[in-house]
Structures are given as C-alpha cells and as structure tokens.
Image 1 (cartoon, rainbow, N blue to C red):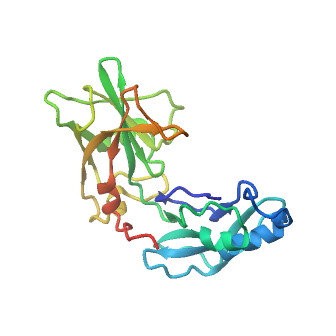
Image 2: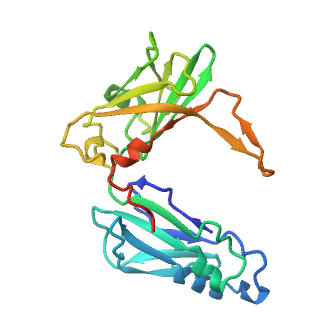
Image 3: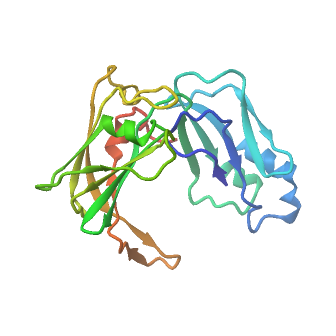
Length: 261
C-alpha cells in the first residue's frame, strides 16, 4: 500500500491518494472484490493537519477500476502542513495478509509553496566531487537560482564552482549542482541560501524555514556514507563514492518534526 505523496513535499496541490498495489498475499480470495478492499482502505486512512492531527474535512472516494482511494476535501486547503495517515493494522483486520511490520504510515506535505532543501548528495567525479542540492519544489532556472546559493567546504582549499547541466533555456529546476574538492564520509559543507530565493510557485526559502522575510538560511551539513542491503540481509557498501547529507537539521527547522502517531 502506497501513499502517493512524498513525505515533506511542498506545494502539493493534488488530491491525496492511497493505492493498493495488489491484493495482499494470504487474503481470502473472496475479499479481492474492489469494493470490499477500498472500503477497508477508507476505514484505515485519514487526512489531518500536522502536527495538531485535527481532521481535514472531506471524504475518501474510490477510483473506478483501480485499487485506489482519493481524498476530496470540503474546502480549499489552508496554510498549514497536512498529513495522510494510514493505519495498516486497522486495514489488516479486514484484509488479512497486509504487511503490518510498520503499523502506521505517515506522509506529511504542504499545499503551500515552501521551498526547502530536501537532500544533498555528493558524487566522486574524476578528481573532485559533484554536489547536488535537491529542493522540495522548483526554484527557477539553474542560472538564476545559483546566484542565491553559496557552498563553503570545511576541507582546506575546498572551493565549489556552480555546474550547469544541459537544460532547455528557461526551464525551472528543483536541483542545483556544484563541482567541489573531493568529499568523503564525515566531511562538512556549509550551505548559505539567500532567503529571497523564490520558487516558481511563489514561496520563498525564508518563509519555508520560518525566518523573517529576506533572512539568509545557513545549513551545516555533515556527509555520511550510504550503503544498501540485499534481500538476504547482507550489507553492500557503496563503491561509487556517493555520500548523502545528514539533513535532519533541515527537518527540525520546519516545525514539522512532531512524533508520528
């Protein structure tokens, strides 16, 4: 079962959706009826304001021909963060076979434009590193947006130069790139973002981080190595030199870090 919105997405203006990829293994075949499945999904899903958990007024509607429900709100969204919460245990009570190892799934999102730094990645390329800054929504063209962001590496002599990929002229982007000195696990980089940087949808970075208009946002990122786990449980270290920024500090700045129910 999948919530069709990424956690902490911004400027999410679509109807929240929950999709069952396929009938759960081990379920009674008689329960494969779409109506029964979607009734169970509606009973275990809710849309709330975050982090107050106050219900958003509306209703879940089933999508014809699909194992999918879509939330139809009674009124336009307000400025607050919202969340889709799916109680997998409650759904499993009427649809045996659902994976309940994660009892509750939560996806938080903002209907408003709040461009913030979702993640930072660094890839070893040649004798240096290429750093990607991934924002939560489109922030304009690469050429313009780079003028609002500055990177400082902790490593001595580590200067960073903006890298401009081939994009259609005037095409908005949500990721910015730099070529920097080589980086490895544990290295730090300071990201300075001009608070006036404005997303194509109209929100500013200062607004996203709850800062006064025009205030610079400075983020101190520590890079950590990333590995992956095989299906048999063994861990495979990354061999391409990729490191991913530990950006919990970014989430804390948003005021949406309340404990999930």
